[in-house]
Length: 308
Ligand code: NAP
Image (cartoon, rainbow, N blue to C red; front, side, top):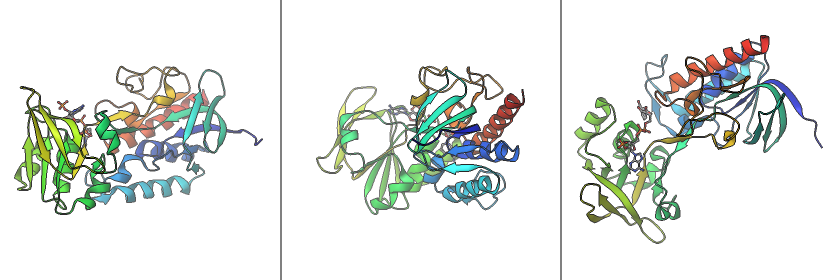
């Protein structure tokens, strides 16, 4: 049996929050271990251009930004491992973190596990996932050249993805359950100006149609209950995200939507020595730059906890 390695700080997650925490913890000579998880680099690795991360006036591709952050972590004395955490124990000290690569102990843990795409939860969506149903326009948009697709949702993601998909698709219809968008004005204007984008207001997906591949969708009117069918080749879900906190249920205080509760103005959780940063605890801002900022805060909080 291999020896359990001990760290002062273990960081779980490798999006902007986790990697920024890694940079700060490493520079503070805490020699952190960063367990990168199932999607190293996090959500930015499935986006295209990031135009709002300060310091990049020309914009930067999401995967490149994350690669650069990892390079920066590795410049210092930090270990980054492509391992996904399967279990944690915060009930006794040192804390225990188990991954698919081993078991580790730590004096402090920084959680930066982010969030994952929310889905509708209907059987036909699950059955046809990857066969016309997608939760990542930037990953799968290319497959819909000259085809018609739906984008479900009314937030920034939905409208941004709708505009993006017009690069490939001949027609993109945004299906939104209300007649008002929560997306920002700039995103709405951009989509509305695009001749390939249409809107289906007050509609939800009642059923994804197709046996082997998506052939269409049955839409339900949220006001009248009326059902209509549309023929499309692809359906992109852009209805927000759920925090990745399954591992921490019963160990940390979570809010009613599953986000980790942190003490306002900081990154402390209800367990002393466990900190949370980025989208896993952010119910409001959810931006790459705010995630990075809170990653910095978590590392400073961990440092002061360890000194104490
Ligand atoms: P979001 O703002 O939470 O929007 C989710 C959308 O999906 C809402 O319109 C919601 O409808 C709808 N929805 C949720 N559950 C649904 C269901 N079961 N069936 C049908 N519709 C459903 O999520 P987001 O668009 O992913 O954005 C998340 C955050 O990231 C936001 O802060 C956003 O500003 C930010 N973001 C920024 C950019 C950018 O600046 N470039 C790009 C993308 C995202 P209701 O409106 O009726 O609730």
